[in-house]
Amino acid sequence: MGSIRPPSRVPAIRTTMFPKDTNPNGSIFGGFILSLVDQAAAVEAIRQSPGSFVTVAMDRVVFDKPVCVGDIVSIWAETTRIGRTSIDIHTKVLARPRDGGDDVLVTQADVRMVKIDANRKPTPIHPE
Image 1: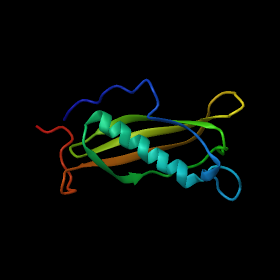
Image 2 (image 1 turned 90 degrees about the vertical axis):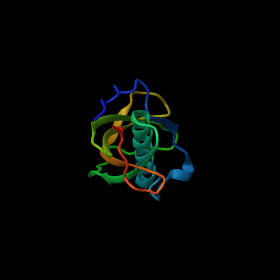
Image 3 (image 1 turned 90 degrees about the horizontal axis):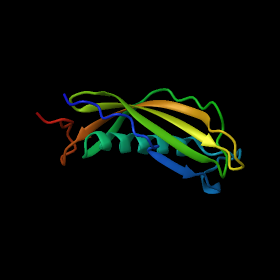
């Protein structure tokens, strides 16, 4: 097995929230945040081993704080384990209010991804 590259010093994703991503309550739709988490995990997986990955699992996600239109959302991703064909990535979602202030933790998730080949079959992350 190969070694894990150290955590990145920049977030995997940083973006501003827009009105198109809101739910009927006026906050950002949780499904949109989950999509960003999935993308951030993929960015981290590819940083560890270039190629194609698919998501096979995401642990229970609890939204501790709402995200609002105009907030700047940063998603940090760190590899916690690399197996033969799978990789586990811990993600943290932070939001900074548009009018300033500190980042607040919105949610966290552990994502498991599997590296696949051109035939969509699992393939080794670090070929021997």
